[in-house]
Image (tube, rainbow, N blue to C red):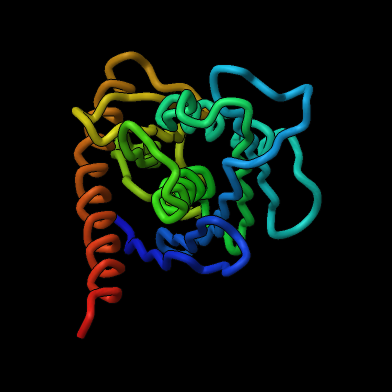
Length: 211
């Protein structure tokens, strides 16, 4: 696995934020809300989730819209929206640097930003990307160069409780057996990411303890 790094509360003007990197891919996620939402998006029973992804160069295209959709569906499954009816939560993700792991890095940045914001969730979540090489090997946290030389790429999003799969995105083709193997490898890797989450949160908490 590549090295993970996270800095919480990176932005002072948001309700929660996290700068997250996996290898050379870096994403900054910020959370604002729960707060006022326009009437057309207001729901009497839950909060409205909006996800905005901004690439480091150019305008958002189809790829970015797909990532927004994956992250939005993920957040909707874990945020306890019934606690915040008739409100909205906006998650903004800024790609700072990309080396092939934009979706996984953005998913993890989003989770940590939500934790930093104090929004209530039923569980945390993490994204892990792997690629299948032309020789049949599976690489966790591949670089852009490794992805370009691969036959397929999969990103899996897991809940921390039991490692349940809650979202997946595939590029290329993975047959059923290979998909299952990739899923299993990424689920194991997700446990290491959760351990990293805990270290980041513990460190943040320790920093706030009286000396």
